[in-house]
Length: 253
Image (cartoon, rainbow, N blue to C red; front, side, top):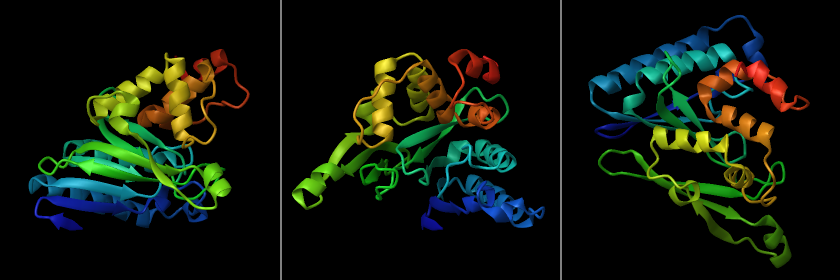
């Protein structure tokens, strides 16, 4: 959908790659492949027309509950046109998070960001939330976002909902901008900074449970969940009962 002469919104049906969509168990991938053909053609036309693109989808690509072949094909196409893509805006998880998309060929350079906004429902006992993104009027790049939430405990006590600003991205994560490089720095920091990881974990659960410790395994699993290419390749690794050393061995690090 064209929203201005130089900005286009593309909506992806991510159900084609959802592990728990039982239609994906059928051997016929025709519809899914047609969507990828359409996506590639549309992005190519947008690139030729010097347009910016906003991608919307329900499920973040590259998660454990997405089919690997589907995520990899999506990754390959979007990575090719990453320079014209403003961002990828998703939900599904009910939690507050993001994914750094790195280049498909070497998986080393951050090229785009998948924003994962928390839900307005209380599913898995979190605070209802919504988000407002701030985009630059000229470049259309994400400048910041403001995250709102409703403290469900206080709402029950007072008998009415109160929506309030929970945080803004730049201040909360101490980053200069919302570039893929800045979000990569956030994920990198999670690997070594326990206090920062506890803050991120609290943010992920919309402030519902307060600051909880995040040990070595906690930090590492969260890091790999935030880097799309790595997460696709390591989603088979056991985390529920593995030791830190065992998980590292599975990851090959």
